[in-house]
Amino acid sequence: MALRIETFSNVHGGDCFFKAIGHPHVAAAAGALIAGLEAAGPVALYDPYGLAEGFAEIHPLDGVALAGVYVQDLGQIGRTILGHAAEPLTDMGASGAGAVFVMAFDAERPTQHAARHLPEGVPVLNLDAMRLPDDMLTNRRRYLDAMNFATNFAFFRDEGGHHTRLVTANYWANYRASSDGLGATLCLRLMGADGAVLADWREPLSDTASSIAVDSRAVRARFGLGAFTGQLFLHVVGAVGHDVVKYALDTYGDDGTVLSCTHDANAWPADYYAGLPAPGPGETVVLWVQNSHPCPIPPGEIGLALMGAPAVRTLDEEIGPFATRALDVAALVPEACWPAQLEVHAGKRFVRPRYEVTHDGGRSRIAHVNVERTDLAPDPRIPELGNLMGKGYILPAPILPPADYATTALPTPMARSQASLPLAILAYDASGREVARRPLGTLARDGITAYGIDDILDRAGGLESGYGHLELVYDFAGGGEADGWLHGLFRYEDRRSGHAAETSFGAHVFNTALTYRGEPQSYTGVAPGLSTRLFLRLGLAPLETLCHLIYPASTPWHEHSATELVLHDANGQVVATERLAIPCSGSRLWRYGELFDGAARRAAGEGGYVVIRDATCRLFGYHGLSTGEGAFSLDHMFGF
Image: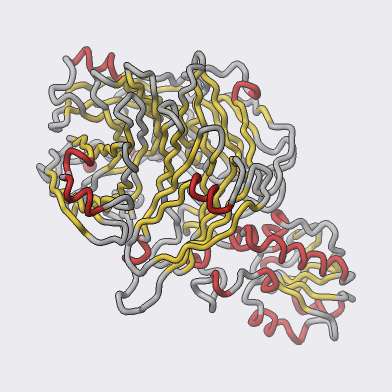
């Protein structure tokens, strides 16, 4: 069964209560609180905010003798909570309890409200006993403030010739008043494969948008660690504007067979994930399951299923608190073979996980699955949007130079209710000219295959510009339903070296003044989002950084973009700016070393980064690294 916790609402956003009770730094305090409750005798549990059941999912109260559960809301009286019929707060005095447990942070106020109804002379305990220390709080007056829990997890490894490098920027500084004199601090905890703490440290952040880099080799040397594969927990104290810790994560090796990039883990555990590819010939696919909670994952609670198939193959072993487990897809679902895809039954046990594909020649790549929505149903209005919103929802992806790379697209259902997908693939030259359109028909959930872009381009005579982009769009010519949560996996293979990269993402409405269901999305504020702010991390020498910017448009928009590439140094200071004019429905593939001269690159230094700004249109970007010898990485970019 899935954990009965609230993690994320597409209406209200992320929930912080589960973060507060599951934070790695409060596990010991939570254990001490529960031990005190167990020793106190019968306990009257007062649950004014309806948090008790969620708390017990993370910190079981099986050893606590409950004298009763009491509520303030008349509508909750009689509801079964932790096996007890909820009673009115006004009856608590007659409970005979030896202690009272107020299920609340900032518990002074609700305790005062209940004071005259508490049993006399008994201790009163509450969740404030497991608060983070004040120096880890952004807002000390309101504990369950989202900014107090600007946290995330990252896959982190330094083992067997594999290394990881996490890069982001202090984008919170952009939301501060320049005169407030306040900075931020990045608190980090590295946990090994068994969930044990390997290192705890803090990195002070400046009051500018400085770059942030955490390299596994440097961490290993700094703390004298042995080889490890685990997870890095990040907590930003002093966050403003965003409670999400976004980052790019590069995986690199001691040789050219290992090079990948992914991005942030999406900090809210979900019930299901999808878009996990089955192994192809000569491949091994490992799903990295990383427990995001201080309670174990019991045997049989997580598993895999072929897309559209009812049978779920479960992992029949326990995964400890914050532990990491490599789950071999073929061992659990041996009949699965590319281009089949699998669903991950996660039960809110872990944040969006990575998977690793290793070819028998030794080359490997890492990517991530995506959240499969449980709250969506087909939207009958989407087929009617064409008259007003043109192409409507668009999922853009690069077509890297076909002479050098093979491009493959695999549509991936991303809602539990999605029985079929009515789709078409459109191919565009970099100039914005549509060169090919291939209707795919209405694809059954369990019958989706992969589509090689070579076949589509060959029939159209290729791309005059040498590269371009493709768009997955809804195509209702033959009927069908849609929910707006259109996703796809895109795989790229170097024709000479065999090195591959893959990335996946979801569709949005782009560059139209009309809005529908929060689209076109904005980085901050309400729709429509008609501007761009993307972060491009720069690779360390000798790696070259590449970027593919796409200008998708649901309806005709500005003829060309007015794109600025703003190069910053490690302290966040601007050192150079280059400008691009990308045609509407076109794209631009560029490399850092080609666009910025040597003087600018030297001024930016090792910690430099690029912010891609455009006030006239919304771009979609992909970034990667290249060794120049056949190894490369590619993933979509993040904005802030």
